[in-house]
Amino acid sequence: MAKKTKSVAGGTNGRNATTAGRGEGESVAGYFRKVFKESPRLLKKRSNDELFKRWLADHPGHTEVPKQVRTGLQNIKSVLRQERGKKKHARAEQASTAAPPAQRRVSAKGLEQLEEHIDECLALAKHTDREALGDVIALLRRARNVVVVKLGAE
Image 1 (spheres, rainbow, N blue to C red):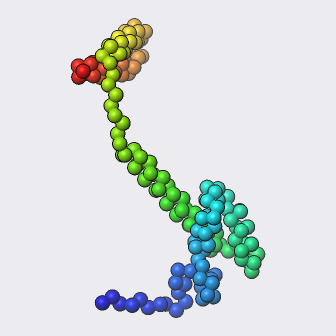
Image 2 (cartoon, rainbow, N blue to C red):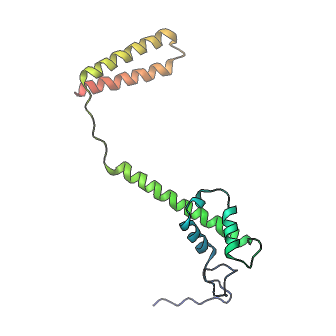
Image 3 (cartoon, helix red, strand yellow):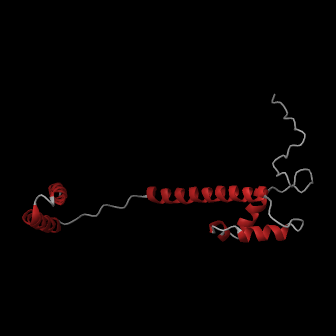
């Protein structure tokens, strides 16, 4: 049987120190989660000035935003942005693995023309400056070889 957890005197039970023990019950993170749910555009903004003004308006007993609230805002903003990024990444991954595009068949005539054009480019590169364009020549040879293999597969 699992043991019951004992509450520590002075513990906040998930609330911040400014609301603990007062029966207010809402944490800083909970407050800002609601705010971001109402207006998600605030999550994208770099500046927190608008959020601080709103917090001060909702908490009339304060003249300035406590450091603990500032820190809580930074943390929840970071967490929500990270969750949002994971969702976007998962959607993009799902879309990319959904169905691979069907391979189109390329005509032999088109491949032969492409091979001829690559040969012309290769000859021009060799004629221009074989040493300076060595990497270009290597890429052109590789491209021509791929085209030749595709021609042989047809």
